[in-house]
Length: 617
Image (cartoon, rainbow, N blue to C red; front, top):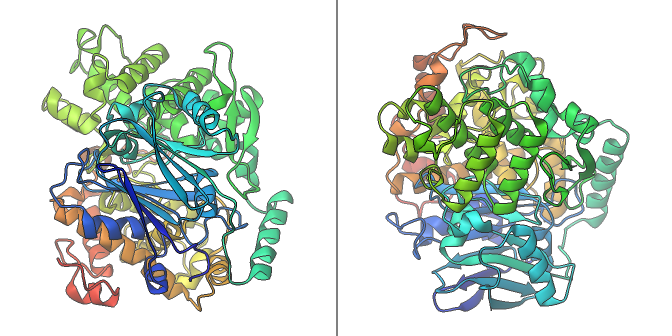
């Protein structure tokens, strides 16, 4: 058996309420590693191209990775994937917490859920034993109540729970998965897939161990990172203010999404910043399994009765529900975050869909009557909170907005379509392509629609490229560069991040590339190399690409949108925007580096190089 794994995959059929266990080979684990690649493997093998994402033919996969459950900082993560109800293609999202570690300790690396139950159910997994249990008493309840009721059912407060929320039950296309109440595999609508199968939750309890090849070496690296974080040598800013620190740094640079990406600076940025949160509403810092960084925020507020049970907002939420909706009331944004977490909504797509509705309102494309009487202008915090409630419950205009901004725009009409800021139907996260030009290419070619995680952030490599030296990249490049050298940087960085999503490891713990190689060797026992790790990432991205092609997506879907070719008229990056022709040229260059043709189709020779000849084009 491969180290880093427990060697078993649980398969659950909800149509006939049966379970089976598979034991993949060591070679299979080394080729696909976990996470994204494992999800792509099962989708390509078993999900028909024409499957309804919300029907019984779709499958949802909960996948850990080689690192999950080891004592290394950043190892408390998992991936969830299926055919996406938001994009109609490859769906994949990552989240942290504790649930996934408990799954491994309970004896399973991955879960493949297929079919569709007639009545609500939840899974109970305990040290290799599996039950499909009645969940009718959980249906329609908030995530916090569901976790409490499951623990009461099972008589164990240490049970870990992942679930879909009321938004998933109501098939909101951007419903998220909720781990341990405050951690969220948020994107591509995986909560809706759970809801469509009437799978309300998966509860796990395990007492086993995750085997590693070299315990002493793993322990050495774990101690090293823990000490470096404690001494403030690494991740100091992340520990102090978490991801919300990004609000001010991006605002200064002119890259803070504001009013549906119409502007890059927000006059109320300081009011919703990580520093202000630290000094006002913050009551606690939280973490994921084995992580010394404690980047998670826990907030409490009296004005809106913000419940700390649901944690606090990340940067993405402060942007999507804050600056991008023109809202500078921090407590209102924190309440919006609580509601999304309570009901199971992706805060990025939810906030972006609300900002889309606000721009429609301000441009006269939607009236107050069409918005259920709401004066949904930018800056209206009460309207934002009311729209979250309507969306989660599909009430009134919420039924339209629950479909996502792209589908809503199509239903509203041609005037609305340019106002939906999306790629492949998934709304953009809170990072501005007019500041980071290769990021825009990364959005366009991402298999899951706009994604900031398996992507390059150009501003990280403008002063030095030290961490890329191992890839043979030694020169920093300007953030607005779109040369072949920048595309080469994108190719390497994104493939490495795809690999991290197979490992599965957090991006926010500052392991160097060389250290990542060493900890992979120590955990798995593989005599691996940077080349092999990059190929794991490239294999995952290529497999996701092939699934999208089977679902009807093609090179024309690899488009960023006209809004980002229009420069800002003020601010630090005034007059700067990636040229559409340069974006297109960079996209083709990326295709070729990936071994794809001009239309983005992987070549037979590249599939052979990646060892996935079984995939047809």
